[in-house]
Image 1 (spheres, rainbow, N blue to C red):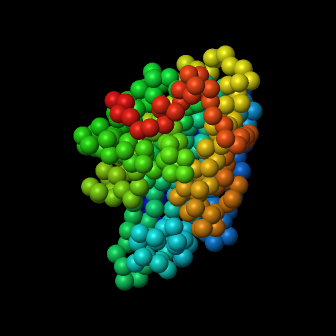
Image 2: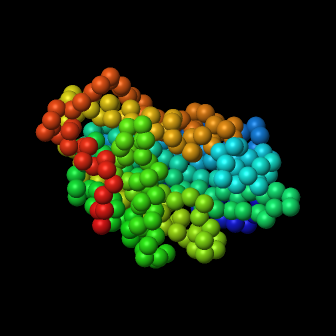
Length: 300
């Protein structure tokens, strides 16, 4: 493993610890249980899951480092010269599913990848981002979310936030539904422009900025009253989360194709969800209002 990969791994391990501690403190009613695992072909990870908390119905924060001598198809689709090469991939991925429908679901991921093959120049890149999926969106919350995202990107170029925000809108788009998964945030991949130090610093800023973006929203909405109607709508909309992760998400595909641990890969799925044929919210209702937020918009 290269020195670059070692530095990335050290940061990611510490990031998992930091996020888990902050989520436990915000929840106040449950703690993470760690499931350490190994991958037969090389590597392993630490899957941490919090269940039935005061705030979070389920929260999963996963660290993994996998390596091998055969890149999966999802990693070589755009880099055919690397077919048959060796690789190391390390990252932290999380999905938080709150109980209260007024607290948004959220996802974040930061990762480092490098690959090599005899006769081919070694390659490395970072990827990452965070996105927000509200069921009953509040403009104040979405504005705060995107302001933190913009500020995290600001030191690395005037156009970085705009590019990664647009990339997020495009990536988390359910083509078969004609809607975004939520109100977006940041997404980037294959980042190696400007050298390792710049890319590493940007990725650190994104990973560390996630808590600043999310926890204030949790505090504002955690005690908002709700009833069965709101809960049923939350469970229905969680179905979109399932659809995206199983149909479109490249990270899910990479994990499964590379022989990763299935339970850890699918920890992003909600603990409870429902599907309803032909559901249409009542016109003018709070539920119908969500549709206006599932179209990309410039927030800041």
